[in-house]
Length: 216
Image (cartoon, rainbow, N blue to C red; front, top):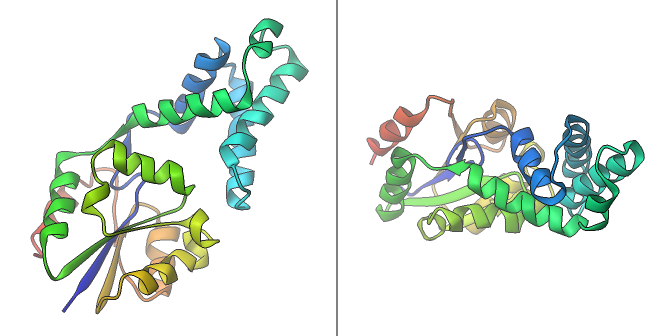
């Protein structure tokens, strides 16, 4: 029997050594020389609004909103504002996010073991923007261990809509589908509704990867 093991990316295969806001602050520091809390908050609000609505570039929307807030409030010197573009801030955010990501040895070994097993097919199913998510896999040397990477922006709906799960079934035929992820709503409830066997991953889940390997 062939089993497709599907892993969430952010918070499951890939961890973070700092918060989302800290990543944003680092990007703003790089581009503006300062990262006032009000700008970080404005970025986050605009990013999430655009992301939830599947607008084309939520990172650009977030940084554009942060720059607009900086101009409105005078929180950043005019010279710094004149010397930076939204695209430069987005690029800084890409690098800051990659620098914040981590992969545990247990997660890496588990992924490699499943990829080497003839009866197991491996996928990543993630809410996010395609290029950004695939770059994380490449950055950590995980891309070749994954047979399919399904990203919500590429299929027109986040996991709660069911679209990514339908895409996995279409791209990766198997007898059984398992979803491993840290979000109860997206990786457990939505996966179960799509006919997947859900496995809830929690922050102390290094042992979970070892348990999963034991099923081989």
